[in-house]
Length: 216
Length: 216
DNA sequence: GTTGAAATTAGTACGAA
DNA sequence: TTCGTACTAATTTCAAC
Image 1 (tube, chains in turn purple, red, cyan, blue):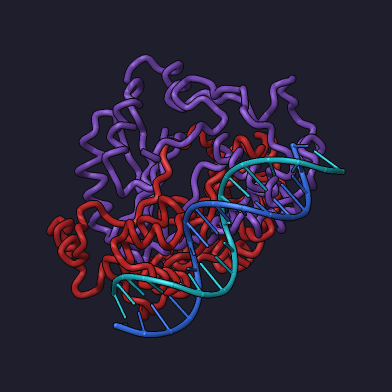
Image 2: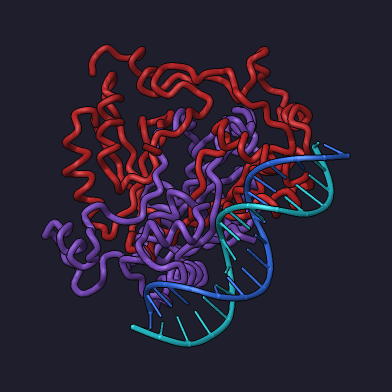
């Protein structure tokens, strides 16, 4: 019920993400997001103070960000070792063309999958799983993933240590002006015409390869 | 100040994670974590009701989980596209032996890095970055990462779509009894003696390879 | 570990700038 | 829009059980 998250600004299944954004975010909005990411349980009153706006304004913007989807959800970060899920693994999956829908449906049936992203490169997707022991990873890969027709191949690595997980929203060099920052960090290379780079559309790995080979 | 997160139950830099756990988590604790992961802003009163305990008890346990570190932090999940960071990439890094400390120090200086994990397999670490445009990824890899002596090689892929991000804590087959569940999902393969599988120690990729070759 | 009441804080509504 | 204030509802704290 809260597993599907919004597009990453690029077309995942082949459709480009919608361009029309509901809410135009200003610097105050971004500051609010920044604060909320490092303390998701802060009261709106304290939030207002930290951002430097009135309480009423903070409530309005807070609700707007929530309604707009800029804030997707509030969550607690858990120490999975303490919770009994001490093993984390990444499974890189190659998915058969035209079977993405099936793959996603199967994903929904695997609670141990915490994160899944479609990627470019050698594989098509990366999934992160958290389980209680190494055997469960093996079971997961050989008995569950391997049995999905959509899955062509997998490659598994273990996560030995999670060094960093940062609640980061604002680029550090963006001192409040988004356009200035954007042009400042552009290394004068390829300008991509008028398309905002952040809204560029990539061709999916599966899609791209489909154009290269006939079989599958 | 809040970037370093706890070990994943395995030795990251070569040192095994500490075994002594402060708080012994029972099923009620786990249920609390479960609820808090899907709604980090729920009031403790409502939390108590959902878990089926009294408010005072909920407050006690809530505070204990926080103090113990089982709850690392509360955070808001942001739609990065709306926040102006529409590009997400994964950079797989091969790190030179004995230079992990330097690598970690450099990571701390890169705000666009949202997540970094040490992995087994072909590469030594995976970092996830969020930036406003594709050019920033290129800049990041070629100008920043490549200049770190600790970094031997990198491989970059883009994330086209984030399909799933689930706030998952309890294994679905763990109906409340952890030991029953653990034995239930063990596929009768290798039992690892008396060492709890969740506390197994892996040899780091760098470490492992160090034993295989002399040069570097 | 639970319940119930006081103290505090959060959320809402509304007029003024 | 944003702010300030007053009002209402809810939460947290603290006590006794």
